[in-house]
Length: 140
Image (cartoon, rainbow, N blue to C red; front, side, top):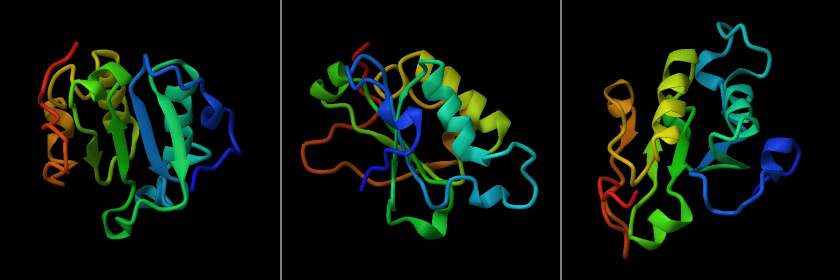
């Protein structure tokens, strides 16, 4: 269930930006006790949304709790219609991975090219779903 407790959750959903979905319960959990940023990974994701990098939705659970800091990068509406699938990441936390994510999203995210090398080890292989094309399909 989506949360609407932050400005980032109310980013306009015009579909021209890639989207991010993150678990509101575990965002930042993998850095617990070592993350200097107040709000941790959830705050980093909010900043991406506030600066227009991506639309952000927090949900109660993505049912991948053992993977911690799960973030789903969703394609733009145009790319989704072209069959591009979302890309799921595990343990996506900290400044460097978040910067790599931001750069990839600015370049189009899913459908604009494969995730950068810095994020490839974090990709969760979910296999294609019904009607989903691989994330590598380019639509930009």
